[in-house]
Image (tube, rainbow, N blue to C red; front, side):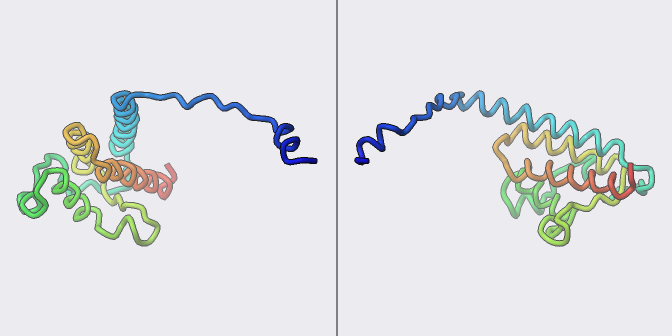
Length: 151
């Protein structure tokens, strides 16, 4: 069989073009998805198991939250200062060592405030993927708490 006949016998699969959306539509979809994840995180944090302690004052600095002046001076912007606060609070290596899950060791207003703080900063800095990753990481930490306490 000649090469031309073999080529002619191939069936061509037609794939419709990928739907295209504008950058604005893509950003809106991403923000909608992000808002759902923030809402889920907020719900999980507000209903952490009663077995976790709820000390006052809380070691979690998120309710009320104010930017750490030293971190702001060192890193130059509020989102980076918040990232440093999150690393300092949850442990810099918590996402890269052990099981990679951020530890949630207490319940109460201090930890619940983190969802609002992240939401506020992501509204002002919507393309900050580092803070977006914190939503996922803290959510994973809360889910681990529920699993450990069989709730």
